[in-house]
Image (cartoon, rainbow, N blue to C red; front, side):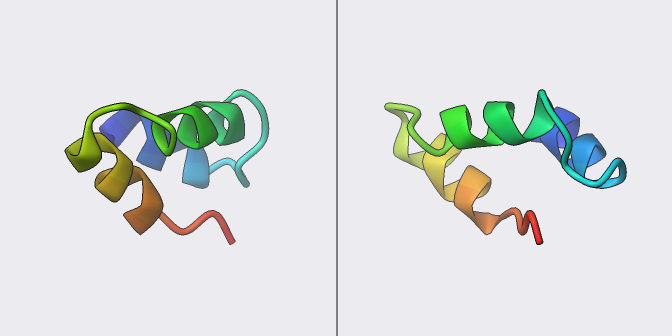
Length: 41
């Protein structure tokens, strides 16, 4: 998740937003939970 968190510092432009959205659909529930915990606003 550190890579995705790095994207937040850049205003969540592509590809960071797409990566986070993909992680929110991940089959592993722990990965999904971490991805949903990251605020893109």
